[in-house]
Length: 68
Image 1 (cartoon, rainbow, N blue to C red):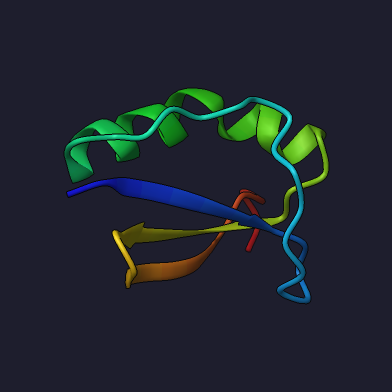
Image 2 (tube, helix red, strand yellow; image 1 turned 45 degrees about the vertical axis):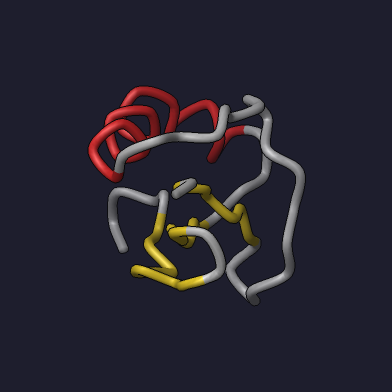
């Protein structure tokens, strides 16, 4: 199982992340990573993220903007 993030603009268009993520082996590891890097990702042009396990969407889009 691999947990991955998709990085998007607010309209759902995929963008390249400012910080390159690894492939995570647990949901907790993926969520810890996004908690650490969300500001850099937002500043790099991502507005929201989607978490997937292999090909299954788990949740999202989740905003990277604190006021959303």
